[in-house]
Length: 420
Image 1 (cartoon, rainbow, N blue to C red):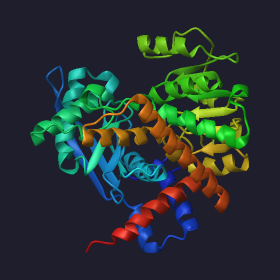
Image 2 (tube, one colour; image 1 turned 45 degrees about the vertical axis):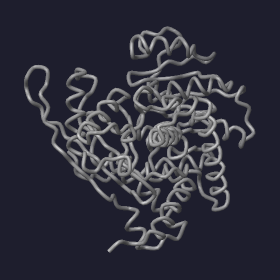
Image 3 (cartoon, rainbow, N blue to C red; image 1 turned 30 degrees about the horizontal axis):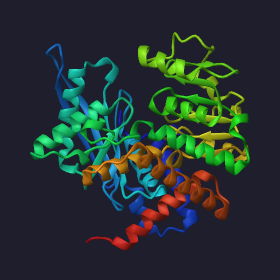
Image 4 (cartoon, rainbow, N blue to C red; image 1 turned 90 degrees about the vertical axis):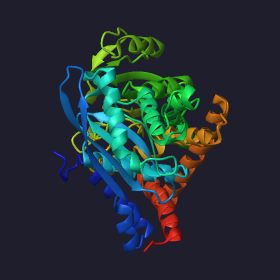
């Protein structure tokens, strides 16, 4: 199941294809190329867990550290039934470039457990988490590898992770993980951070293209933490949100959706289904709507060579990791669509994770306004740097973002040298 399979939908191949283009434009020397293309460390573990019915199930878990050249590995832990090693590798590498693009002092890491968290009790989830952490503990640490929530995990899972690590180390160590509840050293503004970053990048793109947000429509694929908050933040900017979806399907209303109503409905029933405020639409149809802004904020590989010709948006802001395949990139470029790539667009989350880590190390916490102001400064500066790189080298925003990130990691790797 976890063998490397080369295809358009393989996220590790997609990451490497973009990396190779960026490295070629930078004229990266072959020796460095070999280092930056490889993951530093990969762990696969078996996680035996006693289920509520008394039976034992063995889950498979991963932790991949792509690079620690610029700082501790940083990256989420994903609980999903389709997690595989290539996906975790790709996400770890994307984290390396993402942290470098926004210039926070982390490298890239990622973790995953093959399980369906929605079919597990809270007790089973806790036992999986604690056993997983115990299995990878040797490579974790505030100066080594700092996990965070991802698909299928949340602040509660991070609290268990932090507690397990702290118990084994006989110390209170909140900086081991980010995305924690506020009471355990979490940061104000962390929950909204990724969605807010999506809004800030979109706002800067609209300014750059001379478009007025009040004249724009948007469709958002995904109604989770990133999708819903992106929709609410864009709406506050004046953009009309005409469509939103979750894993089961979506809603479309050309007059604009009642987002507050949707938010309340989701809190109650955890799915869009049953909300009356628009016509039903599929997840593939939402991508092809005639809107100004499209925010794919659900999962990878949703815009591919199979549907890219039907994309009508003027701006694509990638809230999810890897929503467009490398094959789709070429067509998006030809169509003149302004793509804000994932390693920039959704970097608000890791930026505020960095702030959380800093606050935990100092045991001194900032106000929400301080968090938001500092994050806005970083996101606006990073957007400008990517657009400037794209203009100077006559490349797409995606390749420009990779060039910016790869160049920063390469510089540090040269400075540090090869330990032998």
